[in-house]
Image (tube, rainbow, N blue to C red; front, side, top):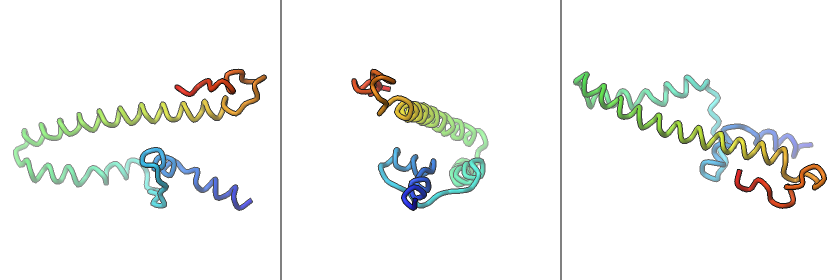
Length: 113
C-alpha cells in the first residue's frame, strides 16, 4: 500500500508540470495561491522597469511591449496545456482497452491526439 500512496504523492500538478516541461521531478512545491505567486513573480520586473524608465510614457510603452510578449507566451502554454490534458484524458479513457470495447486501441488509434 505504501507504493500506492507514493504514487498519489507524485500526482501533483506542479510535479507533472515539471516533468512535462523539463523531464524532471520537483520537490519544490509552491503552495501559495496563484494570484500571490503571480504578483510576487511580476513585482521585480515592474520595479526594474520603473527604475529604467522614469518617464511615464516610456514606462507605459515598455510595460505594453512586455505585456504583449507575456500574453503571447501565456496563450501558447495554455494551448499546449490543453492539448496535453486532452491527450492524457484520451489515454485514460481509450488506450489499453480490450479490442471489443475500443477497436482502435490495438491499432494505435490516437497517437496524433
